[in-house]
Image (cartoon, rainbow, N blue to C red; front, side, top):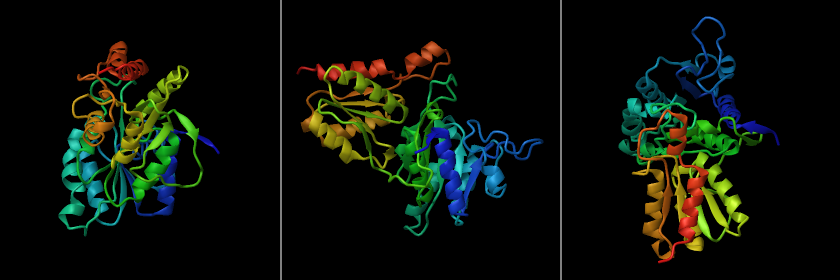
Length: 337
């Protein structure tokens, strides 16, 4: 099976779906990679090069460069979805969600409900999140919790290239608005990815490690850190369940609860801030539905509750690291009431 990067897998998913379905379009800032400018009309393909190659194949009627106006991008995409198209709208950085949130949470998320199921909104919002690349306070935030809380939205957080392709194909074919959150730290990571199209159901968690001592739930890039910690602890005879929910809405509550009922202990890791984040949401869910199974308090490992520093050493300290996860796991395992 061929090995592909996270970036290549996302690009391939869009291209294959655009070939399969002529109603799929791509819209956003610089998605055509320089269309409308002098010189190469496929210069790069977005800030991370994810859409490179789509414009030459599908043309300017289906790969549409826009002005720098996120509210217009999301409004146009939501409107296009009402006319029979399946837009993939790119929000270049998730930090810019506030500029266009009304079009997403108050329009796209509510069409089906407000029209009694007679309207659909088959729209994907691709966006990039995550710290660690020295982007500063306004280009490094992960705001997944803000879209997870909205009824009517589905939220996908792929951890690797295989999941990215399969989940994006599922998202494009879905008849509701799906927020597809790509961790910018993962674009260069790679794994085996089939050439053919395939889909992964939303709301089905993936177990990366199976154990009986403690459950670790990670989101997106933090899953890789959790796996590294679990492998180190395995050498000491400590076995960890490492769970990747893949989607935060719908959330595979059953998989998490079943694991906690076996291990009796839970650590939840995400790169969001500690207040009202996905880690807090999962912790609350387990406390409510599996409290009797817990043998120790739940521990969250999150970013600090502060803006993201620009200084490299401060940014690294701000982010949840493997050492933080390991310390939390050991604290939970050593808990004695």
